[in-house]
Image 1 (cartoon, helix red, strand yellow):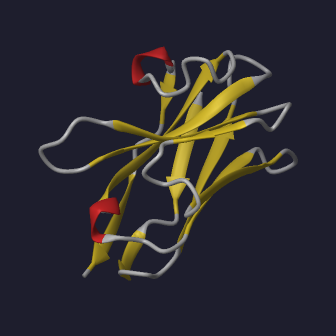
Image 2: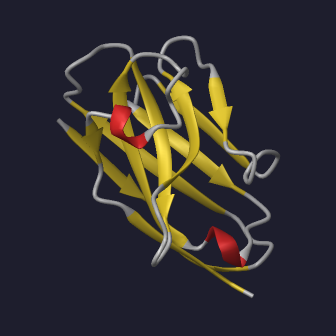
Amino acid sequence: VQLVESGGGFVQAGGSLRLLCAAFRLPFSTPTIGWFRQAPGKDREFVAAITWTSLSTRYADSVKGRFTISRDYVKNTVYQQMNSLKPEDTAVYYCAARYGGLDSADVSNKYQNWGQGTQVTVSS
C-alpha cells in the first residue's frame, strides 16, 4: 500500500497550492482519504476528508471556504486545492486512508495507511 503526496511548496500569504495524493494498492475498495497537517511543535491536526464512492466531504473549521478536497477515480488521486493561504497553514501535510466513512474522519488513529508528507510554507 502506498500513498504518495506531492504539490507542496513555498507561497506568499493569499496564494494557492494544490496538493495531490496518489493511492496505490489500497487494501480496501471504498476508503476514506483524509488530509492532516502538522506544524513544528504542534500535534497533527485534521484538515479535510473525502469518501471514495459517495464523494462526501468534511472540513476542519479553520479551512472551510478556502480548501477543497476532490478525487479523480481514474487516476486514483485525491486533490486538495488550497486558496487564500495564511502563514498559520504552514505545516507538513499528510494524506491517509482508512476503511469507513466520515464519522471518525477527523481522528488520526482511525487511519491505517499514511503517506510520507509534503511541506507547505506560507510566508507573511
